[in-house]
Image 1 (cartoon, rainbow over the protein chains, first blue to last red):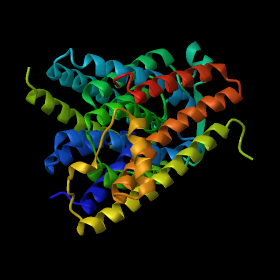
Image 2 (cartoon, rainbow over the protein chains, first blue to last red):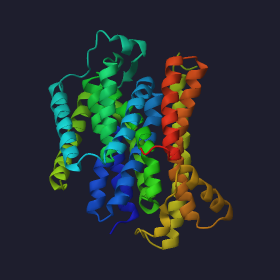
Image 3 (spheres, each protein chain N blue to C red):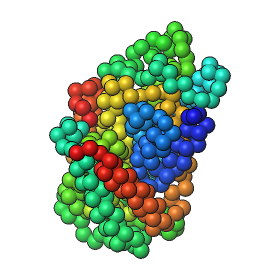
Length: 277
Length: 129
């Protein structure tokens, strides 16, 4: 039986995890809810709501402490939002089975790529490309774990933007926030420090999820029974998570992220195998 | 005083904090009334608790009416709390457009205006997204 305290506690932990890793948390909660017997149509709209709650709950403090790079986020939002809409449009044209395998493969490559520099605390970008410099994609934040101010430059604005478009596609096609894709693109292509990457992804995810709201509203998928307690739990969890993130090392955040990504990959492959041709 | 160039962060941070605070208050009120109404903590999955409409604005109108008449307060508060979370995200884009216009950063005015347009169209139901 699904009850309020259970949902709130569950979503509280998803909120913490979401705030720390930059994953919206949709891919964590949706399978759990369906296991509890919640109809899938209500479960997926809850996934969207969790993304918005994690985003607002954590970004309030991330943005003020300059962990989130707002300019980078706004630039990247253009791509994810357009990708999300394109994804929703073409999703009917391609077999779901292929989609799951395609995105599982995409995540797998990012997983391997990220594993490659697990040992590196911060990325090193000496020269930005022209577009990134023109867009002023750089910043600095105070790192509590390292006890110093970290200056960083973001690079590869164009390939990074295209990567975010693909992340948006995944979000639109599969109905997920696709935080895992965003963080991977931001770290591997744009070379953002892990903390900046997960907080910036958190910020963007709220917007990507918002773009999908109308679909859920018109289809009548939003059940207040479910989303209200979950929104409360997630927001509180995300607020707590956003207050502890800066004490961890970037490397720790990356381990946590990889663990969740592995879980998402397994889920994608499972869904791909189960989906009809 | 805030550090140079830090104003946008403060502005957006405040918007998000306020939005989240309001939304938490509304949701908690709604949930408390809900528990009293049902006399228990189990979910009812009652059909009347489905929030649906052509777009976010169409959903809002009857809610304000219900708020004034005081009918089914738990549903009204919960729905307004959820919508508040969504609206907060929207307001932060509007605020960024205004901010970049004020500091005359044309590149970012264009970027944020683009995002705002797409989001508005999608919230109005013109684009499936």
